Image (cartoon, rainbow over all chains, first blue to last red; front, side, top):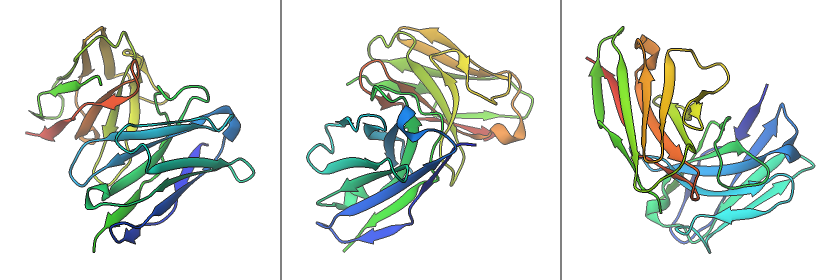
Length: 121
Length: 106
């Protein structure tokens, strides 16, 4: 069965960086992509970007462009999302989710459990 | 950016009643629309993709319809486990989510 297991909660100060991991199992990692979606406390869902597990191609949302980097390690079937220059409004639960290998314009069929990132001085 | 507007914001129902949730797009998204269910403290769960296709393992009481700018999700007879927040999401022009509809117990 498909599983996406994310790294644990993080507390960061404004201006710092955070790197969240998402380890995939139960499917061929390079046959799919990984999207990242975040949810601020009590708010809705916001797409951040996508990376192809096949080619490493990325697409990022304009709101985080320049601060976000998504990467993969195909040897361990793990995707990573790094967000720099953190601000208080980056406080959210960050989810990884499985999507297609060739386009960021995706529907996500399996999701990780979420990683809470808290930005506070 | 395509804006998705969901209505109502909250739907109060008793178990066994029919639920109809609406999602309206600011411009056409063809049939590239999905619906997700999210319960407190959990990740979203895919229910419907491409407007009307049930995802794997989703009960038949969930159905989706629509095309262009107007879409709906129907739960034919609400079960106790269906009380949750529901989000629509389009993938026609990048990717955006609606603001959600909370289905609560009346």
